[in-house]
Amino acid sequence: MYPGTWARERPDHPATIMSGGPLDGMVQTHAELDERSTRLARVLACAGLSRGDHLAVVLENRPEVFEAYWAARRSGLIVTAVNSHLTPGEIAYIVGDCGARALVVSAALAGFDAPDVELRLSVGGSVAGHEDYEAALAAVSAEPLADQPAGIDMLYSSGTTGRPKGILKPLPERRIDEPGEPMLEIFASAYGFNRDTVYYSPAPQYHSAPLRFGAMTHAVGGTLVVADRFGAEQALADIERFRVTHSQWVPTMFVRLLKLAPEVRAPYDLSSMRVAVHAAAPCPVEVKRRMIEWWGPVLEEYYSTTESPGQTRISSAEWLAHPGSVGRAKVGVLRICADSGAEVPPGRIGTIYFEQPAPTFSYHGDPVKTAESRHPDHENWATTGDLGYVDEDGWLHLTDRKAFMIISGGVNIYPQEIEDAFALHPAVRDVGVIGLPDEEMGEQVLAVVEPAEGAEPGPALERELLEFVRTRIAGFKCPRRIDFTDALPRTPTGKLVKRRLAERYR
Image (cartoon, rainbow, N blue to C red):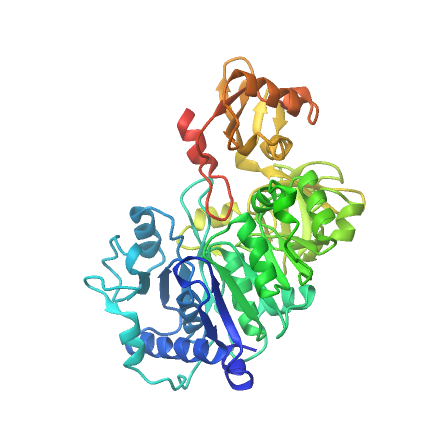
């Protein structure tokens, strides 16, 4: 179950369809995906890359992302898809840090230094010092390499709390066409991915979930629909246009969808949707409830991270019985621990660990950060620093990242809860909550709000929002003040980069 299989069984079936932007309507078949990824694998092999070497990919949402991904996966290489929205210096850091020997880059994004890269291929235009991607593919055979060991991805953390780190997993000891692909074993059966799937991906493809779920769609012979970028009404139109069966979202997308006027939403036919997966960040309870009321019980949530130390899942029906939960453990054994390392009882907030038979990841070139991700007494218990608690029945509830927690007057305050309280106010387009130093309380709570279109920032709106929030959360959690801004620093996948927000004030 990989592109070579479907190139033989259904060569003309769409593997990837582009929606929006300059490539709108472009279709790549399974036969084309297989041939082009095979040719690129041969280009890389001719350049001397072999099992365990690194390929970096810096591209916008376009089919070449998955050509490069599958070329690496069928060559035993380690592929790093780089955030194309970073600055040239940040991109250069990741390309250098991962040790890339080869690079596939968009001509529009090639303005960064990569002195140690041996093979540079440019897509969509000529770049000095780079070979043309199309010419390189045309110059080699389309015959698959005799040896096709399975490769893997090494993606970087989003850098919301510090510099991004490469998340490295062991290389598989198998061929690409042999069983053992974790995404198929974990997600394909859970969410019903198969050859009839039409999967809609409105997020940047360098992010772990869009990249891996998109590749899983190819692996089962389905069709991946890639949006050029997320737009709320455009997403509804795409679901109808392509008869989408599966999709994946982040909570900020749900908020934008819910803020569409009823008369805008109503005309779109969403009846083809069987599964709408969401993850990446905690979803406000009111937001999720309203999405289920609108779309029906098709929402499926999982909690995991790019590191994948473990996983929980929850269906719509289960969530309605346990509002706010992100599910029970499906991969790994869930452990909630105090700072001392001792496990805490149900209802107590602590650091979320997952126990696995053996460690599942490390941070590339950073043994200190790797050690910090492990439990002090159990090497095979891993965490990414998230906090939460389980109820008496074992359902996990998230609170926030440990790095984001505010301590005011000796009390722990979790910004996510406050941000959730703001989320659906019609005058709020976006919000971020941070702690500022305070001589008396240690820290004070600050909310930074991006007003919705037509909302006038100022004292009157600040009073209105504070009164709104006080009806939803305890008084000691409420912000001491609200600042207004034109835009918050979010990644294109919806994560708030709080270190950048805090830098504005510190």
